[in-house]
Picture 1 (tube, one colour):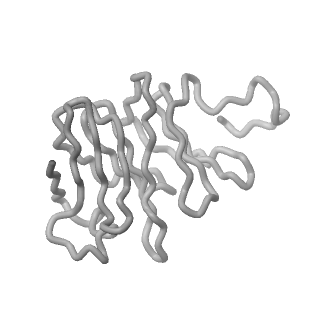
Picture 2: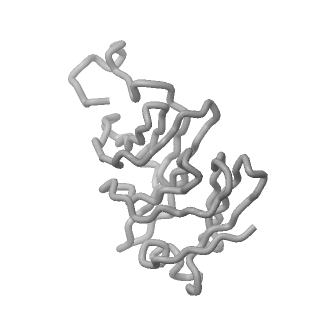
Picture 3: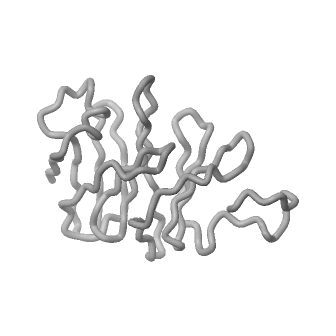
Length: 161
């Protein structure tokens, strides 16, 4: 977790201080994102096996037993890659994957979000929750060819069920 010089199989080597309940690979396979009940999201360099020590801030809430798997956007030249996290507070947190900055907080769900899925063809996010709804998230009034960059640029998002 802190990139110590412990032997690789040492009991001191842990990823989180509490239960890990989410894993997602980056599209290029070079990094892994992990989430845990310690309210942390970590980015791991799979070549070195080390935590990148990216700070995603204090907004992550993760106290429920089920898996909360983040969704990572496709990678494109010249554009940042984003990670979307279904926080327990009924919102989706959109972070810049590499620098950890919070880009957007997507709100509109009436219940706790329990699952996220990325639809590559239309660059939309689908969320499901304990409110029995499936919501479709995407930027308003944007050409779908540039939707990923527009997600970060626009102040307004739409959700529909």
